[in-house]
Length: 202
Ligand code: ZN
Image 1: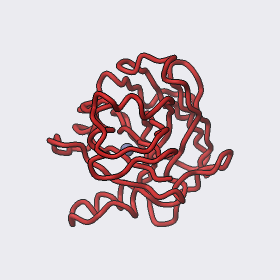
Image 2: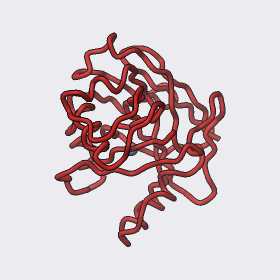
Image 3: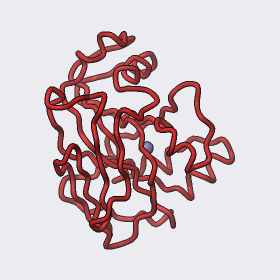
Image 4: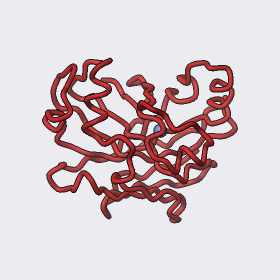
């Protein structure tokens, strides 16, 4: 199983990190070892002083495909989830400056939170509302209608480079409001009013 992540898919988040608006989606990956095991806390790694949460809509791939046309992309997933792309922002900034790959900042153990899934037939995919709460306060409030590239476009795009396999997960990018986590923080992800995950930070 692999995790394919999209960067810079929401205009307001691009602005808050002072990034350039991309002409094509920004792609990076996380290995399966990045998945935070169920019911485990997220442990702040020793190599970063600035771990950020990024709440994201997830798409679970349900069949194998390569060079998928956008008009058929909807056949490749039935379930939509919510997760966190934990990011060592200090390390990422240093790597970015030097034009180096981001993996150490993005793909470390525990950096991928994968919450519950819901059947996509229960959702209006063009208009999914989701939130991240930190210690009970809403810190990120997103809607899929604000994505620069929609789910089906992303599937078509990434499958040009990577064969999609059953169980692969696409992280579709984060809206604005990213920020730091501290020990003892509690993070809750909500999608259309339903709790999708709850994790403790240590
Ligand atoms: Zn992200």
